[in-house]
Length: 239
Image (cartoon, rainbow, N blue to C red; front, side, top):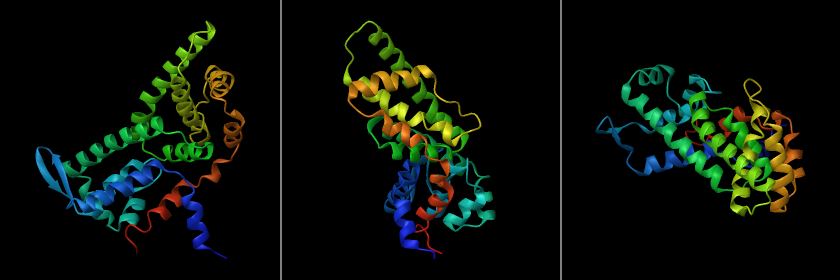
């Protein structure tokens, strides 16, 4: 028997940074009289559903344009027309930049559970390539620099600020899940990173690395991103 209430409860257990940001952005847009501050030096207004469609473009790694039109209740012809307009394309690019900044800030300022990191990484794999790169490149560089600092200071038994361990922990906990959801082009983190995480960082923080390792064994099917995201957005514009 299909149990929508149980399904909805299960969906809410997933922690998706993109889905939360999109819903918040739509609510804020609705409350601001649907005005974008400036695009091409002029104030621009889009109907809310086209603004929502622009937001959903971050998911083009998984969603088709048809998926987006189904969620925001516009026709494919309408969205195709908008995608030929410079203002709409600039809006899409601007929103992607704003989102990637938001994603990086949320990831580096909060500590999540291993299951949350799994969900965050699963959703990350659903983003379009440009969005993933704008997130991944600066964060990976930061993690690599932190790893180098921790390794050097540990080798010479120098003091290391706890905040450095915590910063590395956040990034490692995200990136270690990436290969699970991106088998094409997703490479496991190096043994050096894993050694620093398990033998130094988690021990110095007094935390159990096994909890993260156990979550890594969960099959990707446990995170059904596309159908879950669709259900979470279903109340935006009810059929």
